[in-house]
Amino acid sequence: MEKIAIFTDSACDLRDKDLEEYGIRILPLQIIYKDATYRDRVEISADTVYENFEKEVPKTSLPKGVDIDQLFKDLVAEGYTHAIGVLISGGLSGTANSVKLVAQEHPEIETFIFDTLNLSMAEGIQALNAAKMVREGKSFSEIKEALPKQRKTVDTYYCLSTLEYLIKGGRIGKVSGTIGQMLNIKPIISVNEEGVYYTVDKARGTNQAYSKLIDILKDNLEKTKCRVWVMHGGAKKEAQKIVERIKDLPGILSLEYDQISPALGVHTGKGLVGICVERIIGK
Image 1 (tube, helix red, strand yellow):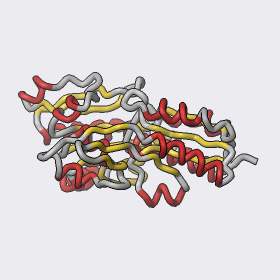
Image 2: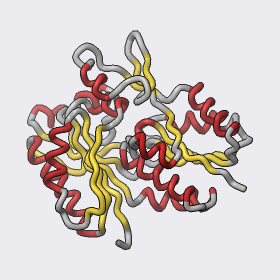
Image 3: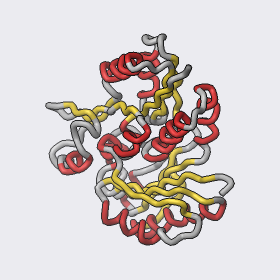
Image 4: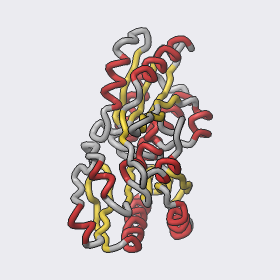
């Protein structure tokens, strides 16, 4: 009989309570300072990363090889026969490739690595749905078949107070930056079908950017009902204001807000506000 484990990485932005409730394992990315390295979400918080920005902007890296290896050893020891890794876009991180290599060293557990082509809650939702399918008794092959279809139902859109950190981190993708920053142009950023950043729209100033974010949400809600998450990076008050502006929109099945992971915050800088949607087809 199949015993299926679901794991993801710390860029998923799932809350601890959801990870615990559905038994989802998490591989922490690394946050690297000149004199110390921390496991994302485990040994350092997003607030700490933002507070230290003036002193040093850290780098990020893949989960440690020993952590990936230990995950598989633990799963084997606990009697799992199959594992599904639902991971950050391969266009933004080499995490999926690293996990694939380590998985090959553990042939005793059949592993499927799924590239979400996304990040933050748009990644986390896909991991959560995989875990729900396990709970429903779906087979390994059924979950593998369902994930690519579900991937098309989620998107994330966000704007930044500055593109400086995205540029420094080499994650700028298809988003053009420096001239726009001088003119206070705020791009609305999403992740395309190739799993890299691109500009959905542009706004002059932060307030207009927030209004365009809400317009994008409304466009989604006109097509179908949605579950909605408002995500922020060191911008709790701004996120709360967005929640107040959208909470009564028709078609929202659920609405939550939270802060992005420390590793994502390194590349966005303080001030990110975004909206993640899961379109619930047929409702």
